[in-house]
Amino acid sequence: MVETRKINASVTRSITAAAAALSIATMVSGVIVGFVKPKDEAAHRFVLSTALISMGCGAAYGLLPRSKAPTASAVSLSSVQSSPVQSSSLASANSSWTDWRNFVVVRKVKESQDITSFYLKPADQAEIPNFQPGQFLTLKLEIPGQSKPTIRTYSLSDYADPCEYYRLSIKREPMAQPDLPPGLASNFMHDQVQEGSVIQAKPPSGQFVLDVAKSLPAIFISNGVGITPLISMAKACSRLNPDRPLWFIHGARDGSFHAFQDEVREIAQQNPNLHLHFRYSRSRPDDQERYHSMGYVDAKLIREVLALEGIGLDQAEYYLCGSPPFLQALRDGFKTLRVPEERVFFEVFGGAKGASPAAEIPSSQGQGAEIVFARSEVTLTWQPGDGTILEFAEAHDLNPEYSCRQGICLTCMCHLQSGEVEYVQPPVGTPKAGSVLICISQPKSNRVVLDL
Ligand SMILES: Cc1cc2nc3c(=O)[nH]c(=O)nc-3n(C[C@H](O)[C@H](O)[C@H](O)COP(=O)(O)OP(=O)(O)OC[C@H]3O[C@@H](n4cnc5c(N)ncnc54)[C@H](O)[C@@H]3O)c2cc1C
Ligand code: FES
Image (cartoon, rainbow, N blue to C red):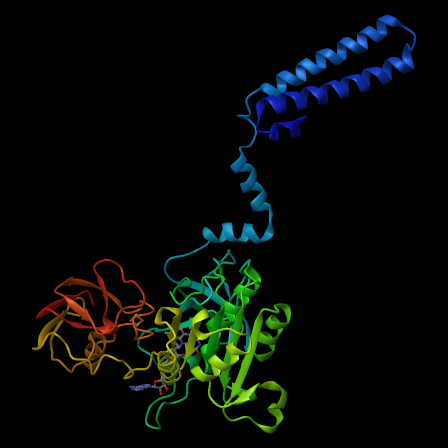
């Protein structure tokens, strides 16, 4: 009877409840009379009237408004909450944080000669939100000998729902030139951060993300440690939209530098729509079964690989991640082969001092500009050729926080108290209203006041 409350139409609900009441009453009283007074006519009349009264009660019960029963949306919400996948997503929506949160390194795994993965769980043991495949975490590291915390961003390299940990996979950055120090944060992570170490992180962020629901073939193309956000994309899409045609094309020097080879092959084994192509530039004799072709990953290779399945270059979208020269060569190649620009998405893992694209870019502020760093109580004169405001500040011993130095991560975001700045390249991340990204900006007005 209670189940009839789930029927929406009141007439149907009333008829169903009446029929149910009639059947139950007839059955129960019939069985009792049959055993106690099988030949008594009065008893038979009693059975009949009991059945009719029950049917009337059932009909009336069915006509009662359903206000006390759960509504359709409440029913579906509670049923959603009881499913493990959905419940984690709902809980995740409430489990985010805004500033820094402590994470414990629960596992550290060497993936290749120079890449190591770090599995992070929140120290408070509460839930963590899931993320869009392709996003990154920003870390704050207390590195001995540094006067202030070092901020760096690392892509999330795994995907699962529910999300129980975050995995970052970090390449040990060597010295760019013999007279320069090796990478500060990456070497600290490799050498000093162990299982049990605690590090601080901001919530997942970033706009280099895959729209999993699309049906257009997605081609993931990476070299070196650029593989990290693309594994997350390939895993998420294989799980949530397995009908989508996917290609995973990766370049490595040789087998010893090729991280996640087994993991990617495993995803492809479970998802027949995921095609792989691994290309090595300097293969070793024992790499025989590990790669498909020799050379560098370029636009020509992508065209050949897609043609094998009858797909033209203009029939897919492309997700690129890797070193700056690799990305530049691929994007140039795509341009030559007339791949529509709006189909090509990419992320560069920049970050090195001196690697800023802005230094050589002419400023519309033809003359010098006064920059007031208000919190530091320093006023300096910037000249065209002094580079970005971040570079200019560093050159004068101010050390603003930064990570990507490319307008992606928002680490350098700074409130603009007065004046105007101009971007030397369009920001990828969106700064808060009234704030600017100093890693990619120069003064536009002749006086700029920054809360820095
Ligand atoms: C969105 C995003 C996601 C990223 N995801 C990943 C990821 O998943 N995995 C990963 O490994 N990395 C990733 N990175 C890169 C990462 O954030 C760091 O940039 C990288 O680890 C290097 O940091 P570092 O502190 O070790 O090196 P740094 O200390 O920043 O040095 C980098 C290089 O610059 C050289 N250098 C030092 N000083 C100077 C100078 N004065 N002039 C010129 N060169 C100098 C060093 O020799 C070194 O080779 C990502 C970056 C971004 C922006
Ligand atoms: S340092 Fe990343 S946006 Fe400026």
